[in-house]
Image (tube, rainbow, N blue to C red; front, top):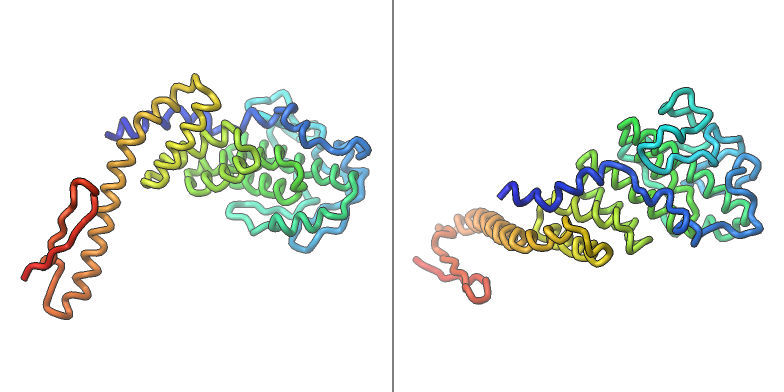
Length: 306
């Protein structure tokens, strides 16, 4: 049984411990490009940033220690490192953003607060915020490569706090990279939450769907297994040749049924303990009540016996 439980998810673990190939998907990013009259996003040092509310990360007007034109978009990619780094995978001190490291990070601005802060921004200011967010993502990638996953989480969350809401593709990637970190820390509920945010922004985000399905299998609740099954069905629609998804679609239904029965037994055990505490005051116990299951419906009926 244990071997069957891991069959459909084992193939996804290796793909879940790396950042997404979607990070360098320029075609997707072009749908959310900055206006033509905006300054070059890479020239973030020359752009004066607007006032932001107190709970928004404070961004200085000084030049970033990591140029935004240098990006670590995928791993492994040791030939594409920030030129100002002292070593191949070292992280320079960053002073322009109030860090949210390490995990668990402080709550960032809500989406509504970000939208309100962005209402009056010029194209230049929006471009500068996007560039700063990409810088934070780049530093998160460096931490990820160094297996510093909690620190990477802080950087990716910084990127989400900074990045304007309109850049849906970039924000989906930041959330998916957060999920990659949580996956390696075995925080399955956090993986599901981050992947769900990424999928809300990009419904066909294959890596996020795959990662969420795998995390839901790890949670091993009947509801989580059912959610994983739906994600695998979606994966098979997006990629009809996905053998792992096809196997999972066949193996999950019996697992879901077994887990549902186990959860029913667990629930009945808890109810029995609670019932004994109450009935004991009247000289009774749950042994005076017989539970019978209707094989047709699966429902239970209770009969009293003296």
